Image 1 (cartoon, one colour):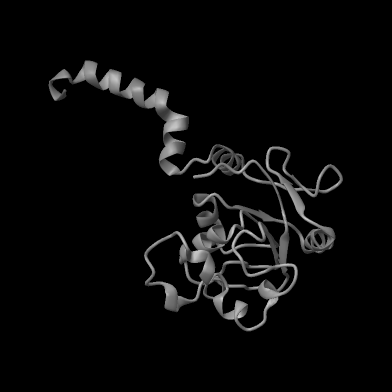
Image 2 (cartoon, helix red, strand yellow; image 1 turned 120 degrees about the vertical axis):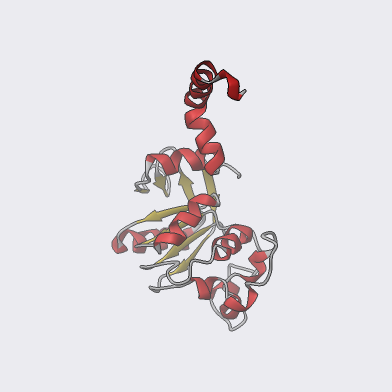
Length: 195
């Protein structure tokens, strides 16, 4: 997984509440088995019906935006991980919302996407900042919008995983390698006939 440390990117503002995983990745594309290339299906119905993703300054091209600002319950609905794969493949590495679907938020961490909750008043301020230009997101400093920007909270374990680009196995090896080696040494001494 690519580490998430710092990024400066254009932001897409989708302020409505309850943008569910079916809006993010329509169910009819669930038979696609490859993770790469799913960005072209992100918000597919809206992108082809004149929604904000095809309006200036976005050009419907993956990589044209990196930050998403949304309302409450973003990513609610079905637990489909393809919604996060499509966001990540499109280039979106950071999402600010009032709240997230629980499974969606876990899938974000699992796929290297920073999902941050902020109160609605700060989301509005962030949307104003995004209208003025690209947003700067600094995970080590836990701040968006530069030194005078908005501070945000992130769980220490999530921060560590994203900063290091660790998946679940990397996290276990990164945090418990010494304990695993100690257990194996003890086990070999207590039950040598097993080895």
